[in-house]
Image 1 (cartoon, rainbow, N blue to C red):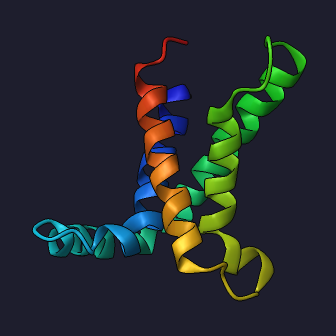
Image 2 (cartoon, rainbow, N blue to C red):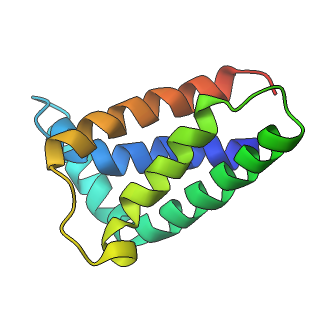
Length: 116
């Protein structure tokens, strides 16, 4: 389940950060094409991030030592990816989402190397 949370943070962060990543000189076009292929499944990544983050939030609230940043970022990634489906409002500014996406990718990578 921890791997699911970490992968949801990485993939969800990538989807959120693609507007910023496509400006990279040599890799931007390739990253944009990869994001275009994964984007239709963004809602699945958002649901997985919400479920995994919510699960670990409940576990650490009741049994764990404290709430970790991995689950908070996972919940926020899920909300950001499902924002239009949940609220029917305009999404937050793209730059804000892109910066948060980069943070989510780093947190996901950190979660992969952090022992459970």
